[in-house]
Image (tube, rainbow, N blue to C red; front, side, top):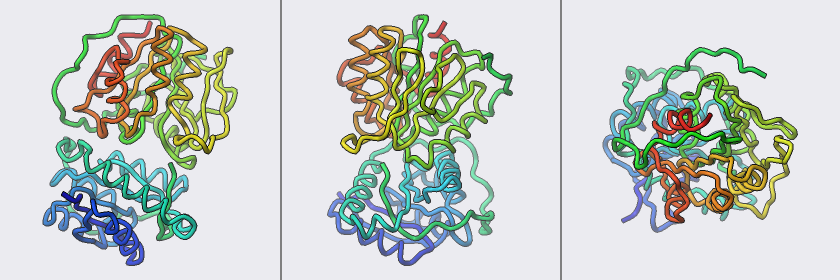
Length: 380
């Protein structure tokens, strides 16, 4: 049965373009369109699509407000479109917090230069997120009062479509973000304590919210350095690191070449590049290799950590499409390090963790809401 899609954008050109691309795939059916957030809510309730594509800046009601209402009233996987700017990154991260599953940047040049690549990427995203857990995992906080007047919007993005691919400061405890409902309990017992020299976390689709939930549970004096690999465009990782740094008691920054690993600091791999760990306890930032699908790539970072720290790494693989992290985890496992995977029930997309579990590399499988707590218990 074809995946039913609702296309939401105030630009007639963009609605038509997205609809044409999706309709060309026999596995996808565009069942409706909407020109603003209020129409999107009404259409979602009436048409019950499997996936919604959503713009941010629209009249009557912006996309983020619409996502919040949809997640409360008829939870549906939402793919956001975003501009590749710092402001676009901020807005996209807000949309993911509101409940959107994933995003694609808008970029007019890619439509005319490589339309087949654009078509393939968009259709793959739609088909993948249609199988996500979002439909059965509504957020627990109430939606805002329905108000057709949207907040001031940022500078509009072009109507187009593109591809991407020392002691810690004292900080207040972060406000919790909405918890998703999922099957109770973890699949594994509480971890044993060990003097890890590094915690390495890899993730993709669903990762921004997952990382936020895990890292906000860590105390400022968390005893191990942390490296983070999130599949994300180059324009987004700095804004994401800044957001995490404000929310967390540990420090978080976008990694730069030569940054020194230290307890209570999480370094986020910059988008479009690769992050490795060297023998001096520092990170090396290398140009993204076009032969690699992911920039940054979890396998690259995990593999370098295995070479540098042997059995003293605790690696965690969170929600995401594909299998990035599996081969790096295999190297870590061969060296005696520990591997954790997020459980299926709490994943947005059970791809990367499933690859770890199927390869029999996971020492433990935990629900998302237990991972931060268990990190605190495991590291001495």
